[in-house]
Length: 72
Image 1: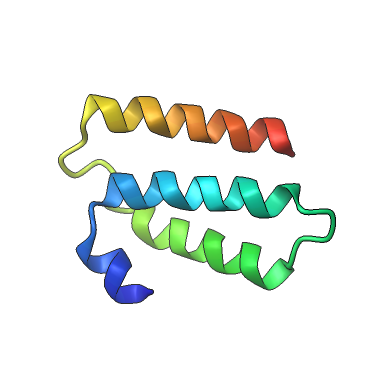
Image 2: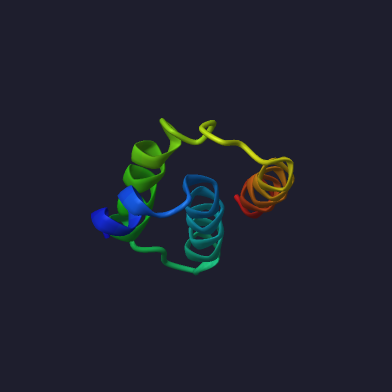
């Protein structure tokens, strides 16, 4: 997991992690360990989110963040 986080495009990873967080938050009894792992990964990747930032990534990020906030 750490190798993927270090070598992949950070904007895409953040967007995918937000989508995973949304999916796991909608489950009737979400696993706290899974949600904790996703949040830790988000914290690690978000430090370099702005490097080479693309407009399309910002748009997708805002959509995914809105979906997550609407689900909780």
